[in-house]
Length: 530
Image (cartoon, rainbow, N blue to C red):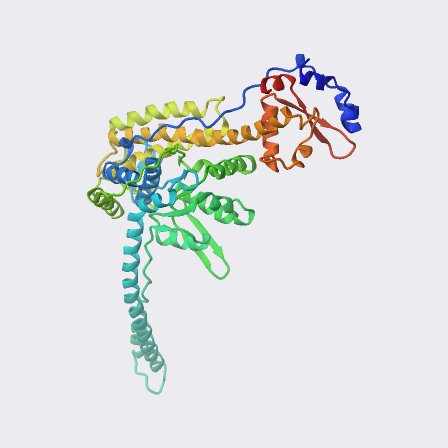
């Protein structure tokens, strides 16, 4: 007789309260009635390596140089660069992924890199965002000069208004007024135009209230990047009930094309004709696992699925010091690419304008014939995956966002490569390469949720093996021991997995008050785990 069979044969009257005894007397605890438990998930699934060939031509040498000098995964620099270059294009030019419909995608992206502490995520991202920060600095200097001219014009406006107002008063004096004086004075007053303060052109921001971000977006309809070093802290903050407005604004900004209006007492009405927000940041494995698990359980509103440039590469065990100057030619070409795209002329690259799309219409390109065939074939395969009944719902939801992601990436690669006219097959193949790469990393992120639960489940099984937990134990009983890794909600997550994989069975006990639950241990599970 095995140890578990012996446990099954015990008289539990001496071990458990009366309400458990009644339930267990009805339970068949012999191994013959139990199935063999399923193996628990082990480790993280492998992810594809990034092929530098999918990086835009004018950025590739610069990005590989950064990754090499920092001895960091090229995935980090690639993800940051694609979001950054997409934020520069924003709504300046869009893509229509079909030959005749008005389905339109603009170039903002949301992304995040996942890595352990000390993996040089932040320094690498800081280096990649250098071109954006330079554009931001130049724009700030130009705005300061424009503000000086505006302040002078505003003072002149006040003086002219005072003089013209004095003329109106004089014309209204019946003792001194002559015929026609009033009309002439009114004309002079009406001819004075109040100067308009110059809009502050922005490219990147890190910490702004939603109202302030709305004002920035109003002045920058082409779009801007919101960069947060620890991105999921911002996402967790947006999940709070009192931040519902901010959350809604960010969700609007993800599509990059929708209007948003703030109505506030004191601030009045701020109408943002088009909210285009790119988002990028970093996080750690434990934080992304916790956030995804809670997001899917408590909200599941698609927020996490909007992080489409989500990469979690393996970190090399050996760090190699590289002490050399940056590749100046590659850096010059990359900064030139950013400069060219922020000032891109839509007409010059052959973009069309839909006459029926209204005053905020975005110029657009379509695929050329070969690229269109590639994308259409990809779309057929994608829709089959999304509709697969065996596909987990969260993965189907994430993949469904690839409908718009791949055209966006194709357009970004096309323009960053210096292309004009219809988006070509070369850029489209690069985007399709991104699709395979990103799908693998996305699956690792969702698998990590189960992997974390499996780690807790194994800790619970070890306690069973040691005899610390007896047949018919409760979650509360397990938690009160405060064993390492077995506290709070982690216990519930591990127990749920053990039940799902048939290592345990749960039984609800009616006590006359609030029902309680106990867990039966599969004898076969103990034999496999022992």
